Amino acid sequence: MKTNKFLTLALAVMGAGMIQWSCSKNEDSIEPVQQDPNAPKGQVRIGVTDAPIDNAEVKGAFVTITEVRVDGRVFDAFKGPKTVNIAELNNGNFLTLGEGQLQAGTYSKLTFFFDYEKDAMGNAPGSYILKADGTKSKLVISGNARNYLDLNTKPFTISQDGTTDLMVDFDLRKAIKTFNENAQKQYSFVTYGELQSSIRVVNKTATGTISGQVSGYNAATMGNVVAFVYKKGEFNQNVETKGQGESSVEFKNAVSSAKVDAAGNFKVSFLEEGDYEIHFASFKSSGDANSSVVLNSFLNLSGNLDLTKLSLKSSTEVRLSLSIKGFLGL
Image 1 (cartoon, rainbow, N blue to C red):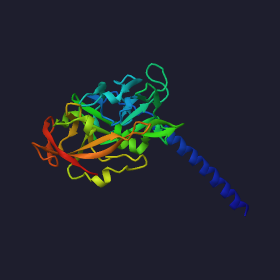
Image 2: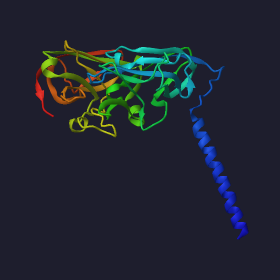
Image 3: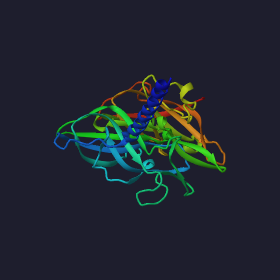
Image 4: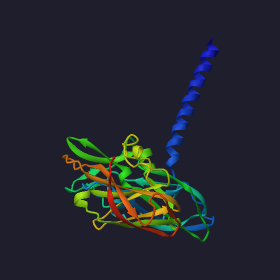
């Protein structure tokens, strides 16, 4: 009996030690991977762009990035902290975060570290939505205390003496959610998993553009119109018009999107080569005190190409000339 008690106590101590070691290992998992100084190097350029948010109250979406890593290796060419207004990087506009060398090889993950508390100038908060009234709503990842985001990508190769041009495409419409606090509308990032799926990482040199013009468009009578691009055959109206996931994200499976401007022009950039379809949805103000917009209808369009069969090649632009035939109910 005495032996059994001793054995039980010994196993308990060993188990506690293993748990402590496991926790320490997990905490150390965000430590950077060291580069081999003698390994061949390749040139890497990393930029950021954005698909717009369909919310008139949002005048800016600022994120403060403190560090960028590629498969755990610190990307030294990025000089942080840097506060970026993601909301202004639409219609093919982008910001280069840095260009420098990394160890040659095949990679499949980018990691962004954020400062939620202070921006690059030391002002609070670090990441926030700037509202039309000039106030700020602090952004943090919903339900998660982590200050970093892992972005798993398609494998890409950094070649010795070559240049790899990566574009990180935030989709603010998917990445931001609203909630009420003290009878006021506030904003936050969606959940960690939803935020991961709202951001694309593509090889910029292997992408193309879908653009065009909708003639006869009038925002005053038709509302704000957004062009949603899907992989061919993946648009399901009944699913996409209903909020999906914990944050109720509409049009969740769209590859990207673009707002139609007052002149009817639109441009969806940095799309990988492939077959796509495009759908145009109208949003109107709900009339509530929070300046919310709601899905109103889809546009029935005629044009020079079949909008459900758009074939896009790398480094090319598919140009659409469209006219409005009417509206399709939900």
